Image (cartoon, rainbow, N blue to C red):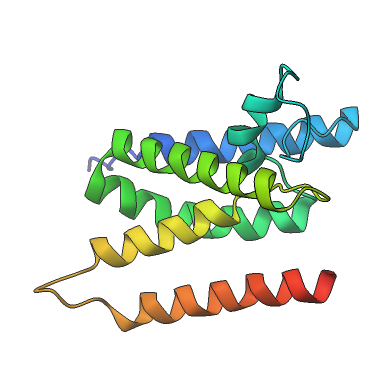
Length: 160
């Protein structure tokens, strides 16, 4: 009797690579103490300033923050990549990272931003579009978006 051979598949390359890069950033931040993966008000002549506009989505404040974001990213990312393609997903991540980094840089000069919460929210929205059938948006994904946003707003208010 022939048994099927199980093979691992790198099924969502953008999602999996993003998760691995974020894990690498977490380890680097932990062992070096240098927080390269956050965006904050600095001189635009700083060679790392533009990197930070994109790189902040890879940084996390700790393992709990990382695990919370990666759970959502690994659940939603493959669906979004299947529906919209890897290149479009990559562009959506880059645009979201840049816009959130730029907004934070301009409007919140006294603090730093790190983490993939903006990417998670973008994936929730794109997954809701991917789940549309006959013009109907799944209520479950809308509720997930509302709960996720509520959690983020609460954390922002409670921590200030």
